[in-house]
Image (cartoon, rainbow, N blue to C red; front, side):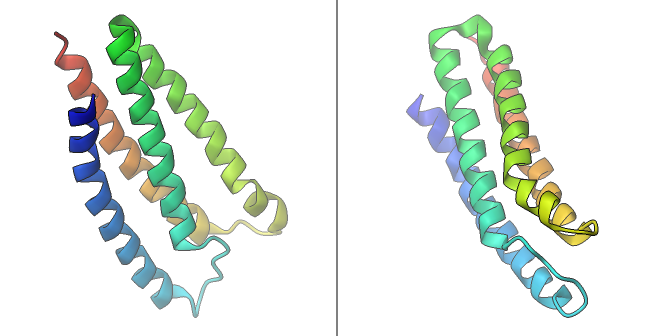
Length: 129
């Protein structure tokens, strides 16, 4: 279990750093023409923590209930979607107009993290003992 989590974090940590730096520079360039309500670091902390929790939960379920791994991943995905709504709720409730920059700035990394998460879970499912 530790080795699987370690290899996952070896990909996730550098990816998080690179994406966060790129988005920070992009937000700084666009800040004169757009108003951003969410900070870049809060977006990436949310994505990083949520992804690590999901993958750790899936690894645990895989080690205890091998045949329920796929269901655990789907359940964690739904819970992550609810957490996303809770995270974005202040933005949704407080803005009178659609903050397109914040929505794009949140969901582009969301889908990148989801892709990485899915790739590692599929590897976990394929490598059944």
